[in-house]
Length: 635
Image (cartoon, rainbow, N blue to C red; front, side):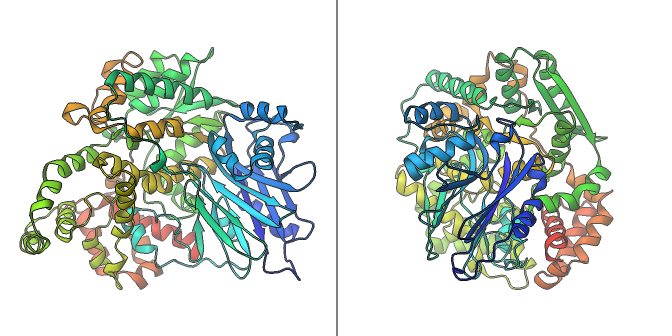
């Protein structure tokens, strides 16, 4: 795990401006991503410079140093991530005559690109952001892994191409100034993170998951998807429940085994839920020493804690268990620091406990952890996912086929003022306009909220643009697709890569640890995407039905079938009490909010929440993180 960055001054042939000082500044901006080593490369023409920070995981010797070049000097690589099958690919390349100088997966990527070009990506099993400079052709190639576990940001100011693992790396270049991307603001408010390729910074983009780009000497930038979930294969409509159970067990065991590849200590984040508990149980099968497990809980707010379940799993599998308890004071002390590390405002409150459990792991000497992200998106594990599936099957689809839009619109205008729940009103609005039911699992501000909040609200900036496009993609690839498949695709297009996985990457890297995601092995993802709803949810719409069946015999049934709690943070309580003053100060002293939002409506949301009249916790948390980001980056 590392941090990468670079500059390609394709428009400055006569006066290239890349210097060691610039590349060092870029590297130093992400020292937390790689405290073990640093390096840079400047091409002989001085048109390209690459920079690097190393968190040593595989081959801890200096032989794993980056940037790394082929012996002939044609290709030079910087790479962030892990290729879990690099040894198998290495064997194939050695048979072709390639001579290795290290035991690193970095060298395998380098030779694989030299041998197969961009097609090498299809061979890689892992998570990665890659940049390769071709000195012969004077062009730069970049790629992001299939699921988007690793980030890659880029900008194209004034005849140059900049890239980095974090946005703050790009901000070190004098051609980049931190400015708000006003186009992304309404999407952040709805989705808690703007969809790729947008970021909250004007002129800075993120490379989409499963995409690559190539930029030539004349500045021609070509971007393409090299992998898509829509190419997973035909639906497994005739698969039996037992066949699905056996394949899930096989894939998960293989994925966890692959992700135990490490030359440094590794462990598991254990919440006590089914996903993290399966990580522990299956890792324990493969180890002859105790699994290192790490849990976080909240002081004085037991309803948010799953500690008893985590302790039970730790005891059953004889792990070396570590715990940390936090409160609102701990949260307040790190919020500004988290805003710095997140790069963009991340509206997910889980960033707070995730930081403390990551720090716990690092302080214990554990550098690599396995986490449970992805399971709920693959196997419909969230109660709200099941709620929306039921709503679509039982009401939305049948009613939509018989009621004209004009009738729906009239009914909405007549009845919506009587409905107090903002989410129900939002669903009514979508139905009245013929929009899709499901936009994604992270919904904070509805269009109704934004109409009241934003001073320059534009209905054309509705986030339905992304949702409708993604639904259309699935319908085109799978004309008879079930709604569960369409919902999974939307989650893999936005919420998972840009919100959940970015909190894992940025917060883990803030404490210099590497997080690995066994449920997001692309073989597991593709298999889950092909499963029919009757397998995923069973005959009675049970969340994560088939994964629970697969867990039987591995975990105790009382753990498998207990009520889902989910990994959360008590922001609703904190913002009514200990964080109330902190929240108020930030909301009403923010230049960004003053210039773009109706502060009287913000005050209304604040008073409703702090007096207990209505739970506006997520809305206020999203605004708070926007102001924290503003302070860190916009000045």
